[in-house]
Image (cartoon, rainbow, N blue to C red):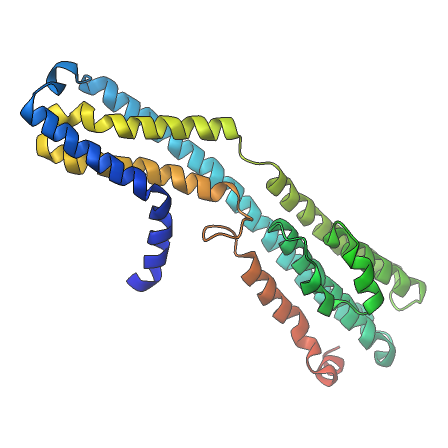
Amino acid sequence: MLGEFDPIWRRSLSPIRKPLFLILVLSVLAYWADLRTHVLRSIAMPDQPLALMGALIGVVLAFRTNLAYARWWEARILWGQLVNASRSWLRQVRSFLGMADPQSVEGIQRELILLQVAFVHALRMELHGEGEWSGILPFLPSPELGKKLVGEPKASSFLLAQLSRRISESYAQKAISGFQFLALDHTLTRMTDVQGGCERLRNTPFPRQYDRFLEILTYTYSFLLPFGIADETGAWGVVISPFVALILLMLNQIGRNLENPFEDKLDSIPLTALSHNLERELLHPFENPAAARRAT
């Protein structure tokens, strides 16, 4: 169990390792200065203002962390909605088109599901900031479509348009009824809403002024704390100052890690794992075409 958490702790502490070491050094220097010269007793800040400053910074850090977590949680909800919409798409495609001639619709079913899988991967790659679409090409039904995709600036929108065009063709060929067409189109609208929500979160960064100002306050307080409490705590200040700084700096770092939920980092939404799990789930019924025909 400890082995699983060890990489997490290392990654979490890595950005604040140097500041913590500096604060430890400052704590030792403050203790030595107070022990040898007693100069800090004449210039030390009173306890009440120092405690008030720490409490205020802690409250604001907790508030910022909650805001960052709200962004992270909204991103997870949006991706969960995409998973649900994809499952609905699979169910609708298999049940609606399964009512027609199995010989003629099996290829259409597989094509619609492959395009859906391609859309999920394309959205994941866009949110990660990837601009190379070669990983999507195996899911496209034809090389011509792959050539068109390569020149598209936004692969996810292109694939949604292809899905919409394909169900329109199925309706024109009377493979699905008008009600079934509307149900499929509604599912596409749900996926479009998820796409827009994810892009809104990715393209609206956390206010940098708020983030930077709070970080400056946190570091300033952490560096001043050893000199403010050395006359009262003595040798214990060497432990207390780094420990308090650890709490504040960790809160600040947690908030920074959660601000951008779609980055490919440890604390981000695991889009790659979720995408591949969804891919296996959607394509499973088509691994054995005869079983897929019997199921429909």
